Amino acid sequence: MDAEFWLERWREGRTHFHQSRVTPLLQKYWPTLGVPKEGRVLVPLCGKSLDMIWLAAQGNPVLGVELSELAVEQFFQENELKPLTHQSIYGKHYVAGNIEIICGDIFKLDAQILSHCVGAYDRAALVALPEAMRADYVRHVYGQLSPAYQGLLITLDYPQEEMPGPPFSVVDAEVQAIFADVSPARIIDRRDILEKEPKFLAAGVSRLDTVVYHLGAQP
Image (cartoon, rainbow, N blue to C red; front, side):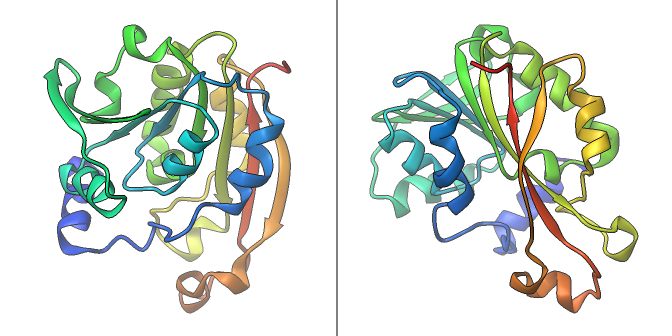
């Protein structure tokens, strides 16, 4: 699975993963993490998520990273924000208020950018990556955040053989393995969402849980 896969989805409007509301689990659990007010929050593979608007409203500067320029431009247009833009070695930066989105490859970011992030919110990144990429992703991204970072990770857990991803099933054993050398990952919520997901029901998936993790050492 390469960049072109996701760029094509945005071009064709096949973006069922985009939510037209703020994620309720974010609203419920973000305040429990203790991310400092005015602390920068990383949102990897952000698309045009409204969750960034909500995080910014909490007083946290947001750094989103997204491959699709179409998604980035739609985010600012649909939220009536007028960004300033500039280029860097990381990609094209769009900045409006306390929201910045870099249109580029998350794997091109380095500690100079990532180490300034004291928070992380991952609803659509880890589950979008095939298994072979997930450990490298965690090591590269989370391994270069501020050592004191706090994060919220939302995954899906379902029998992978019953439906191909993305979004992929990422079971707890894998989460613990890939975060073992980076930071603690503690389950703070698990709930059955199968009846709310018609795509999974239509595919004949027998079980679907969403799992919420608190990432980072206890504050």
